[in-house]
Length: 225
Image (cartoon, rainbow, N blue to C red; front, side, top):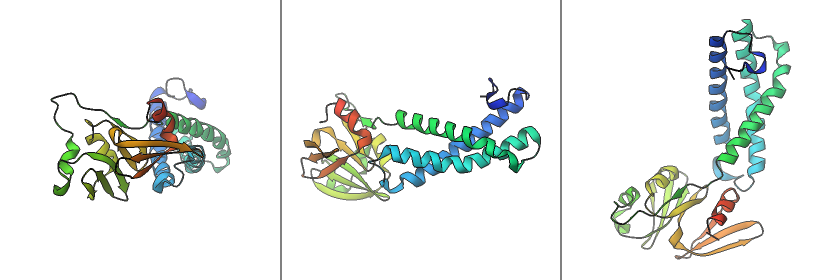
């Protein structure tokens, strides 16, 4: 953006353009992270990613328009004229929609873990199992608020941990995140069903796990169902 002088910024000195675009991008990135967290919290739109994206893009474009208007005025004119704010609504909305769409397209692949080669150290996550579950086979890990419910061959238990961190430590076991709140070991899947636009995995212990529509295509191509 700074190099090409995007959106009419080309007449300003390069250093000023660079500082401006870095400030705009950092503001947009921080705003996007906050709005995305608020919209996706609780998973209430997990099965409707398109609507989720529209809400995020719309919700972000409002405060971001104000931020871009203010920064543009301060960087290039020394003040922020309220009459100019209307010129930023369209461009900010377009850029926000494009960036939101790119973000969704690049994050549709589920987080996967892979089986460790023979002789490799056991997955780090096994060290977090409660004493009574030590030595058990992990079937699935389910996020419940700030806790994780462990589904294993020796029963269930809760630990205080984040799912994203658990997935990283489960490397060494073949599995994948199949839902916002679930990681499943591939060997623990007894049955996979699809119907009414939804997919469900039944584990060897009888637990039924929902498959998020956002991950369903990638999992289907990987042969999960």
